[in-house]
Length: 253
Ligand SMILES: Nc1ncnc2c1ncn2[C@@H]1O[C@H](COP(=O)(O)OP(=O)(O)OP(=O)(O)O)[C@@H](O)[C@H]1O
Ligand SMILES: [Mg+2]
Image 1 (cartoon, rainbow, N blue to C red):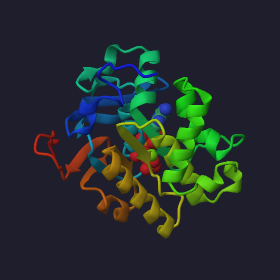
Image 2: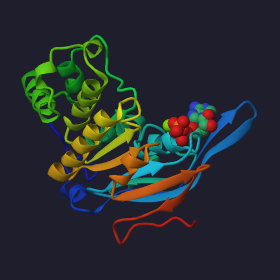
Image 3: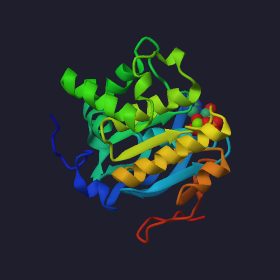
Image 4: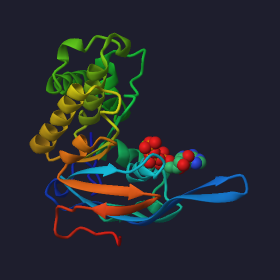
């Protein structure tokens, strides 16, 4: 079902504190009319297996743009993205999609569940892309929904769920493929304080149980406080990094 190629969620090295992902002097600019507008301006960041880090920074500072490059959804205009030491620059779009599907789970502020599918079918999607047989898909989706505490809602469509429940479904979808890394872009931004705290507790439990690394973009200092490592972005650059592991790259302030 899964291949071993050194850059997948199956790689035990990704779970032992080894260097999982590295951005090396990454830039991103967008061409608007005749001009290139720089958005990310030289970010170097190393993330180890099992790390939990938050990214804060004002609106427009480039956090989502950076996350899209970490998540292999977008390529840098300059600089390198390494996964398990492998440079992703030469990888085809298909190969990036494959690595993304097996290595990374995504959670977004607006959940992005498909409205016509039930909660369980939404959770099954990453496994569908991997061609996992239907019975196993169902079993694993139900186990993931169980893990986030809403197995009873498996048959409901997203419109029949509360915001907190929808985010739990989105988290179940992110964990169902057992990724080494979860990227969450303002996962508590649409939730009330109490529900946001529950979602953060769930993330921390998943990190501790499975060694899943977590990168959480947030505007909420309370959410950032729950992350052992905190990084701050300003105008396309990393301006602060508390660090957790001795061998990580520290940006020049
Ligand atoms: N596809 C695009 N084309 C042109 N400009 C873009 C594009 N995507 C993002 N930008 C610009 O890049 C800048 C950074 O956007 P980004 O979404 O990364 O910020 P952010 O830090 O995530 O902000 P927020 O906290 O509001 O989500 C913004 O000025 C935005 O307008
Ligand atoms: Mg954003």
